Length: 317
Image 1 (cartoon, rainbow, N blue to C red):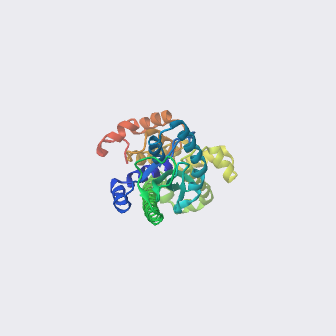
Image 2: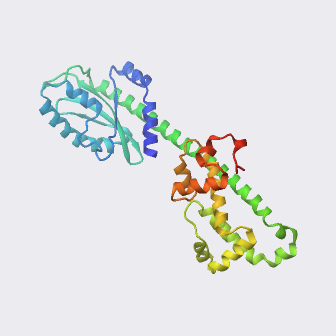
């Protein structure tokens, strides 16, 4: 998902304005080729500039074989070159400059340009390519490096910004859920609040329940069972079940279900999340079971609850 997001951003950033800038400064055009989907992974797939160059050659069969051999040789070198890029002359005498677009260790694409070197020399060079001297070629390569680097860093910064916003949103949602649950816990423990002496005599039991609550809040987004809590704090599961129900006022399973569904309410406010994604995020392994549980608890299926005005949502906090 991150790779697709990063690739989409870099596609948008390679604008026509950048192409015009490069053309105005060098008299050339650059092409961007994006990594084919698996299992192709560049095998047998020529970059856009090479494919256009190939159309200008007379002997297509011979040219195709030569171009694919050149790709096998120079693509690994370009991928390893990083932001410096890789310059080479193909078997037909065409000068190429390739700069890889990387996300960590994954090559998402190649940005490149082609030209003929001055003087023209022999061989069957494709017509229609500008001729450049060495200094002109080097200047064009430096400019393309700067453009590619700016696009890559801008895309990376945007991805990080979006991740930070998502983390802040998740943190706020968690804080709201914890506040509501603390308020609900206080409501189901009136005897403990009213009787300090009794509270003092039940400290050990409440400490055990607090450990269970901490475990539930930290792991509600995956399958959690009472037996797991019992093993974690080395207590008998049947006794823990009775202690939890007596202290909290709700059975273990019901408390866990309500926590998950309250968290689901927050996540459903994000229109970019599917119902299945919300279900998995709050610990359900089956989206249909989540839909049924949510409808029984809130009075509406998740999709209908999401589409209704906040004031008209049954079960909304």
